[in-house]
Image (tube, rainbow, N blue to C red; front, side, top):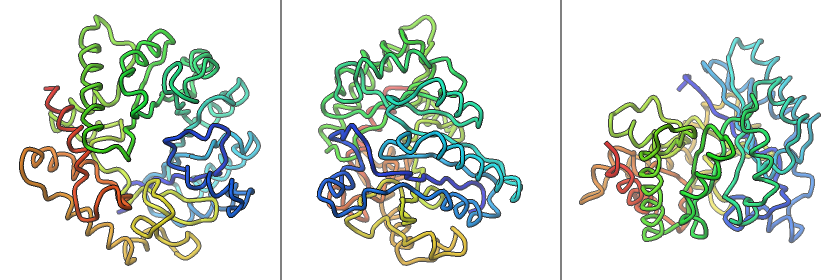
Length: 347
């Protein structure tokens, strides 16, 4: 429990895009209704608190989320980076940082700031014409900074509205010079839709295999092959295996703690406030975490054609954010269906 810890500081709940599939849509609705404070910026002292309450870990990972994180401004992020740098020296703990952004506010100063502190940029992009993250401006910015030292990868949310364009989006990234591409499947998709996601992804697999030289690495393709070969340590996509069970925590602007990006409407993946604990591992002894762990182990049990992929992917990548979409103590059947299609397509 002291190998690595990932904090996902939700530095604000504000965004100017309001995408239909966004996991923060509940916060956006509350902002519109006036029952969530407009000033929802995460105080920088919370960053120090995260560092000090994870003493003893071998590595810290900070993945900054929003809303749109860049709305907090450059001075905010410079202060945050300096805090992590100072606490890293104090605790003798190495760390890495990344920020997920729609990219529309990126400029040379932003990219140079991220490069100065070795923070990688994950730019959300859904393909030209695909919603609010498919603008020409976004494409131009992605192309401009494709080879910048700070650029990590371009990420696409695969949803009902754009899954059929997956190969086209990949070709756009190729032509723009993007080196790394990742996708995330809409977590609320049902089983038939997840199956469509899977088949569309396999089409991209086949396109990649037809290339004489691959210039844009697709994480899901690489990870599917690694899974089939048992090389679990080389996974990068965030799919296939759970990555937010007992060592990845979203810290909201008010210090509340959640597994992954779970909704605020229940207690399945919520664990009180960071200020309530002396150390982050105190969470392992809470009633809510015991419930999550019990759900996780129960989700490993499935019979029939999905049994093998369930064992391989630990219940379909397991996400505790089920709230009526996926029953507690059950595997994530939609994702298992998608994963089986992907894993059957590679060797």
